[in-house]
Length: 209
Image (cartoon, rainbow, N blue to C red; front, side):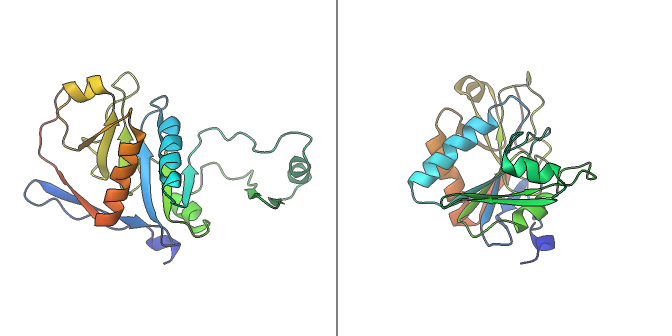
């Protein structure tokens, strides 16, 4: 599958329902996003979900969007010296781990998600943290409007909302509600979507506080 064909087209709402299709990366792995505003706890949740899936034998890859890129190699390290000498690509390899560092001082925006997915080696599943506007099935991590407005009322790619017990008790949400305090349950919701290939959500259910 070419990188340009990564994202599937979502089906049009019909009779108040909408089907969110499974999306696959060029390596064939399903792609599931975790979206939410800064401070909502996306990284903590994704880390927990990765641990839960890995414990069940899944080979998981993670793509994370960062607004401010911190160097993954530090001043004085060999790879840092190579990059600062002018190398545009640096590969650091050891028997147990290897990494590719791409340098592009002229690029002002982060790479497209499709580009990053195309660079992945074979795996069972790709979890994407950030890229909240991407056309991929997404779990929204929401802790209330202190952090930002909910995404799901406008984003038809959000198939589930992971939130706290107090917010679950107050909200009437037209998406699958997941317990933020139970990452194993969220991991199983991801597995369920993968096994069913689609998930149907109601588009006209009320959204109230």
